[in-house]
Image (tube, rainbow, N blue to C red; front, side, top):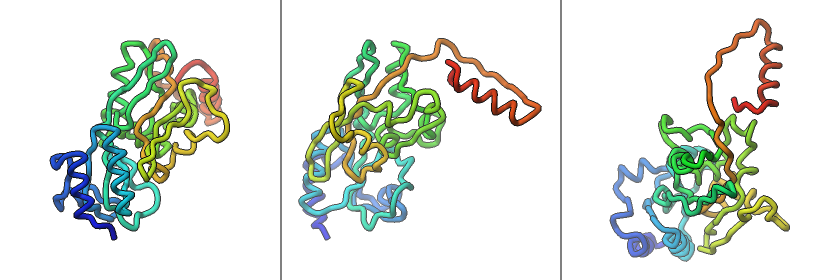
Length: 248
């Protein structure tokens, strides 16, 4: 078992005492499948994430990355969970290039916040998985959505996350920082590491930064209610809509 007291002392120096949680009720809230962590840390900078992972690696401590917790039920039950690493404070847009239809953002940003920043240029990051809207009980972070490879019906028109994510920055368990992909469509020679991390549930590394391809917003939207006498008529209508320029 790791020397948790010494490790927590290091974590305090990295993020500050006020950015750690250790109260029993808080630890219960952040439990993963009934496994209670020893401490929850809230870094606000990428460099802090790197130092946290370096410290945890030296002490052989288990680190579980977390956004807003909407997909924490996925994956295997952990044998232990020494540190919950919350990325919710890494929530900024790093670079927005509307002419190139690309945006780079931190993993803790939510879809509604990103949409608001893209709206003035009539652009959007066209994903709509569960827990991605303001009305959701828990609004997922985009880092969590990517780590869980969580897609919605919009993939029928715009393709999946594996097609929309162009690159990312990931910090590995020992604190090594790597970059995958890039800001152009054809940027891979050899293994496509970006697709490897999408859906990895934080098991391969902590995603801290994502570069994605954008799409223009539809010029207008409208609600249409249609009824059909036969099932095959409804099926044919759905096929025609999906082949059209409309986004259902």
